[in-house]
Amino acid sequence: MKSLYENEMKLEFLSKSNNEAFARVTVAAFAAQLDPTIEELSDIKTAVSEAVTNCIIHGYENTEGIVKIIARIFANTISIEISDTGKGIENVDLAKQPLYTSKGDLERSGMGFTIMESFMDEMQVESVLGLGTKVTMKKLIKKPENIENIIGNKSKISMRAD
Amino acid sequence: MRVNYLEKDKLLLVELTEEIDHCKTEELRRKIDYEIERYMPKKVIFDFNSVSFMDSSGIGFLLGRYRLATMLGGDLGIINVSKGTRKILEMSGALKVIPIYDNFKFAI
Image 1 (cartoon, rainbow over the protein chains, first blue to last red):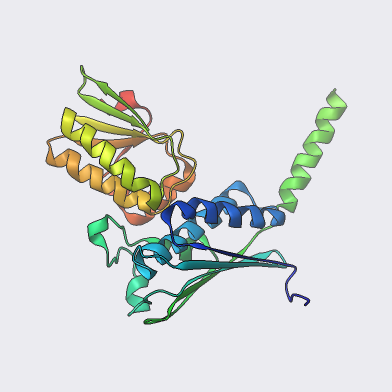
Image 2: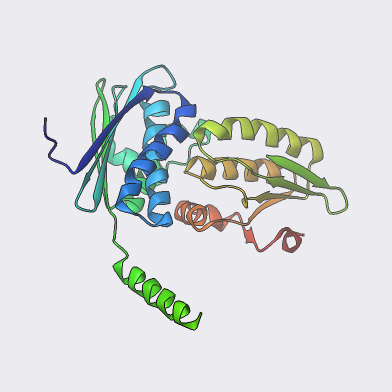
């Protein structure tokens, strides 16, 4: 079957908190083929970490479930879909409010969706009570052609000086 | 995590050496609260020099320790914060109460 995308990957893992690091590092490694800057890569890792943490503590409320990630690359854009089949979100608009948390007792800051929204270019939340939640995020990786030109010129200059 | 207590200045220096996410904060919280309660420091300083990653779990984690330190009559600040970590803390408003120092000597 031919994919509509230039590249695609799927990842499924148990909703254990020590898989958070595994998930963000794996997606970052997949995103690396777009040649992102360190800052862009760090943004992606943070957004993935937020979404996966939500699946584990809110979706499954620390019970066992499967977290699913699909990442796709198409024309300098990475799209990342992170979903659970947990309890779902009653009021998505409320959940997206900065500093809103349903788990203040766990020292949660309520900044998860706000961070995903601002670190990525696009974010969408679909949720059905009792069925689960899916977060879709997109980020355009800007090709640093100008920077390459500058560095290229510099290396030529230094070679001449040598 | 490495902890150093400077008796003279009543300063608790906590060097964080792990990625700060939801998985790691639970254990860190337990260990650091024990140290804060044991020493009742005038100042708690978190050194972020070896922290390569932090997500929003770090916000609640820092504010929680800030609450404990101030409740016991002390204060809390952070040093060596990366651009990414600063961005997250700024966004949440945590920097309104938690100061970033240039180094730990400035904190004294």
